[in-house]
Structures are given as structure tokens and as C-alpha cells.
Length: 531
Image (cartoon, rainbow, N blue to C red; front, top):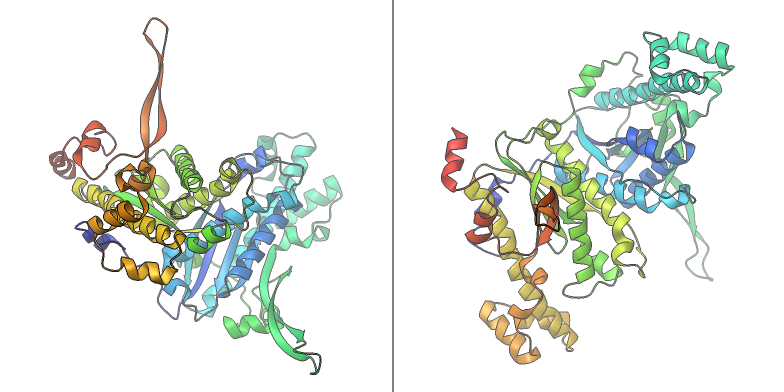
């Protein structure tokens, strides 16, 4: 990371590590999925293709991340259980939940056509995620039993509801009929009115889906002269069980006991409030600017696989900017965003009440919406290039308490943009001229700004200051007014629009011209607001 006088802002970052030996569960839930399912005309009460899509995404998550051993899901939610001794990204909560929800969201869009080949996706899906800290196997057992009980009760209710609606009731009338009914009464409604035996419905609807790793024999032939060798390898499978929190189910899969732990006895009475108390609820400080910063995960490899132009691919940068605009349009409390390369910082207004300022939900909603938008918009910017695999991003939330500090944070990111871009421009010009990557790094070691400018000018005839401003300054996204004028010069209408520009955000000029972005006219007004 480039050094600058603004680096002190890193001290506001919080390393939210989940201490060992707590077991870690990352749970994701569809964000506004009731509306999403209506727009995309999912079958009610269960759309088998939609559920299989969720299961496919969960399977891919387990295949990508070796430390995830088990996942349980139904409807629009999934819970991922990490092995007990995981050091996945050093157990930092924000990084764990953002990477999982980002990859899941990207997969959901990328795999849509496999399950809905004749139906285009309408609207952008996104998810929220949270971390559940389980201090013991008993808490994990209670959590899994609670989620499966929720699956059963919600599915039974919804099956009754939609059968009533399909037979002429309005949704309001159907809710009134079911108000206060218990399990047995709902079973009787289904059987007596519709001839449906609830227990005969597909197990995926009633029990949810369990995705887990199991060990299978794999026969390897080393050479023609040697006998085949049998080895154990892990395989991801999907199963449906009446009770995934029972000792018998757990003991059937040795990998679960080995990697996570075993259950001593079966669990019967589950208190929802007890289980929910283990959910991580990190609320961000009030009256501070919240910055959600997202960074591409392993984007060096992603850019190589996709054949991005070095040192800057303008199409890739414009795709990032388009995603940032979509994020501003989705979350009205974001007042400014700044991006460079594979990162973006989103600044939420000081008094945002979004998700009651819960860090996990704000981070996950932002990063998952950005991720799914990235995949959805890929073809707009790379019409002739196939997306080889879904990308993902990690995110974090940081609070900045004053006008000066949020300004310094944004200045830090732009200084970093300049230093890194200048270095990368020199580096890739050297490589393209025939130097190896090691030789290029050696030539640039210890060089300063002026020396790099001279190298570009003398060796390659490049005036750094004449390179596209998007490369040198990065991109700023903010709300601006767009007016429509009538022929007589009268304003017909005026509305807010998210715009992308490439200004210098280190100096005061931009902020004085756009004082409403941070709702300040001067640093002094910050002090007044803080009283």
C-alpha cells in the first residue's frame, strides 16, 4: 500500500476477529426476495428450479472453500458451517461473511440460465448475511434444529396459504383462515379441502436441503506398470433428512464429527431467543460517516484469466463504475463513492438508519448487490468475451467521525490510486518491452514519482499527465441534479441523477463546488452538528 500523510485513517479500522474455539456459521438471506420471486414469477409455494439453483450455489461455495464443511438451506436462505479450527481469513467476521455472500450472489446470477433457460432474470438479486458465534456444539445443534423447524413451519403455512389462494381466496382471506392455526389444523385443511397429505410432499420442501462434505474412495492409476492406488477424497453431496440436528444423522457422516464435532444427545425444546442471542450484532457508531469498502478477491488471477488489458482495462473500470452507479441507485443513503482498479468505497450519510446501522447487514447487502450487478452487466462491457467464472469481493465497514477525517480517507484512496497507477504503468511498459516481471520490479525498486515520470517519457515517449484521467484520478460517483429545459428556457423538470466523474478529491475545489455531498459547508459546521 502506498505511503502518504493520510494513512492515519487506517487506525479507524476494526479487526472483528471471532476468537477460537467458537464455531462459526455464516447465514445468508435473500434481500427483498418476496418481490424478486414475484417479478420472476416463481411457482408458489415452492419453485423447484429456484430451490435447485440455491442448492447449486451452496454446493459451489463448499467446493470453493475447503473450510466450509456443512450448509443447510431452504427457501431463500442458507447457513454455512465452518470447521472448528478454521483460520479462514484469520476469522475476521466482515471478511468471512462478505466473501461468502458475494460469491453466492455472483453464482446466483451466473447459474440462472442453467435452471431458467427460457426466462431472463428480471431485477438484480442480492442477499444479507450475518455471523452466528457458537461457543459449543450444543449451540450449533440448537441453531440447526431451529432453522429446520422454521423450514417446516413456514412451508406448511405457505402450502396452506397458496392452496387457498389458488382456490379462490384472496391473500388476506387466506391469512385470516390460517390465523392462529396449529400444525394439526393445517394438516387437516390440506387433506380435507385439497386431498394433500403433507408428509407426501417432496422432502426438499418439508425438510430443506443439507449440503455437506463426505469422504469417498478414489482410485488413482499412477502408471501402467503399477497397481491402482485407493485414496480418500472429499465429495460435496446434497441430502434431505428429517432431522439434521440428530445424533444419528451426524454420525452417518464421519466428516462432520471429524471436522466440526459430535453431538452428545438429541435436542428437543428449542428456545428461539436463546439461539438468536448468539448472532453477531455489531452496530456502528451513530452520527458518523459509514464507509463500506469493497475489494476484489484474487482479482490479479481473475484479470489474467479474463485477459484484461494491462496496466488498465478501460472496459473493466467502466464496468466497476456502472456497478457503483447501480449501488447508489439501490441505496439512497449513499452520498458518494470512490473507486479505482478493483476496489470501491461507498460513503453513507452520517445519520443513515439503514438496517439499524448493523455492520453485517450493511456490508453484505452492499457487496452482494455489487457482485450480482457485476455479473449481470458483464456482457454490456465485454460483449465478445465470456465470463470464465464468477468473481467475488470482500467488504468492511469503517466509521469516520468528522468532516476532516472522511475527507482524509477519500484523499488517501486517491493518493493510493496515483502512486499505484504510476508504478503499474511503468511496470507493464517495461514488461511489454521485453523485461521479465522480476527485472521490471528490480528497475522500479526505490524510485520516486519524478524518476518514474522520466522513465515513461524517455523510454516510452509517454507523458504520464496526458494518460486518461480515469486511470490517474480514479472515479467518483455522486448525486447531481439533471434538468430538462423547455424551448423558452424554462426548467421543465429537475431530478437527482448518479453521475460518474474523475475530479481531484484531495483539494478543496471539488468539495466547495459540491458542499451538499457531505452535508457540510465548512469544517466548523461539523463541530456544530456534533454538539
